[in-house]
Length: 116
Image 1 (cartoon, rainbow, N blue to C red):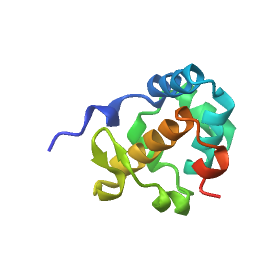
Image 2 (cartoon, rainbow, N blue to C red):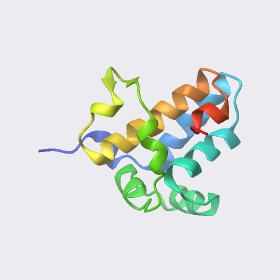
Image 3 (cartoon, one colour):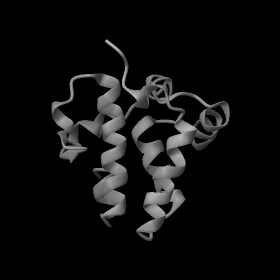
């Protein structure tokens, strides 16, 4: 089975889209970075390294060995699909990130987004 196109896209090509979406709704790049760090367990230096190196989305998420266990509290619909019903682990992680950025753009507080 052929992989979804998002797997081979670089994280660096998707990241500015996340930032732009957040900024259009009055949120900040720093909040996007905080969400990415919370979800993946990466420090900002590690995120920046992946951005600079052009790591594809699949390897970016697979290398996140400290993925936040609270991610299982992320539920809802992204792109017409319930996040909690996605079986492919990489796609599920991608959709977790999409969902958190959506919540940011919809004006939710960082406390609620980060499930604290």
